[in-house]
Amino acid sequence: MSRLRPIVVGNWKMNGLKSSVAEFSRITEGYDIGLRAKTDLAICPPFTLLSTFAVVALGSRVLIGGQDCHRSPSGAHTGDVSAEMIADTGATHVIVGHSERRADDLDTNAVVHAKARAARRAGLIAILCIGESEAERDGGKTLEVLETQLAASVPDGATADNLIIAYEPIWAIGSGRTPTLDEIAEAHAHIRHQLVLRFGDEGEDMRILYGGSVKPSNASDILAVENVNGALVGGASLRAVDFLGIAHSYP
Ligand SMILES: O=C(CO)COP(=O)(O)O
Image: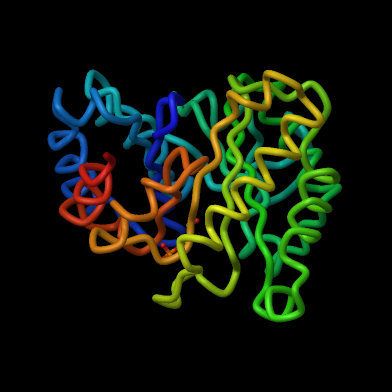
C-alpha cells in the first residue's frame, strides 16, 4: 500500500440543485474520524453550488473543488469562471482537462496546461485528467497517449502540493467497464515513472487517482493497486451512501 495519503474525489459533473445540499450534508456527516484517518475526501459540484457547499462543508474537513477554470484571472470571457473565483468560494481544488471538456470544449493539452498554471496562480490544487480512448487502447497506444498528455499538459514547476493526476480511460467513464487491475497498475506505474523522470523525488509524492466506473463493489480492488492514490468518482459520488462506501473501501 502506498505511503501517500489518498484522496477520494467526487465529480458531480452537471448534476445538482439547491435541493442537493441535503445529500451533500450526508457526505459531510459521514466523514467521521474513522474515515478521516484513511483518506481525504472532496466533492466538485457545479459552479452554482460551490459557495453553498463550501459553507456546508465548514468544520467537516470535506474539501470542495471546481470542475474547470479559465486560464485568465478575470476579464471579458462571458460564461467562464476563473481559478481565483473558485478559490474565493473556499474551494481548494479544481479539475482540469477532464475528457468531457477535452471533447465538448476542445480543451487541448496546451489549454489544459494553461488551466493548471491558472490553478496554481490562484493557490488551488489542480486535478489534471488524462486518459486514452477505446481506439487508442485497442491500438496498443495507451502508454504513449498518457506520456504525450502528461508532457504537454503538466506545467513545469508542478509539485505534489499543487498537482494531482487523474487517470481516466475515456471508455471506462460512465460505461460500467473498467480496465483490469493489471492494466490499471501498468498505466499508473507508467505515469509514476514519467513524473519521477521529470520531477525527481517530487514525482514520487504526486498522487495519481484512478477514475472511470468506480463503485462500492470494485473500489477496494482498484484502490489496493500499486500507485493508485485515490479515486475520481462520477456517477457513484452523487449518493452519499455510495460515495462514502467507496471511501470506506480504502484498505
Ligand atoms: O468521469 C469520471 C469522473 O471524473 C468518472 O465518471 P463515472 O464514475 O461515472 O464513470
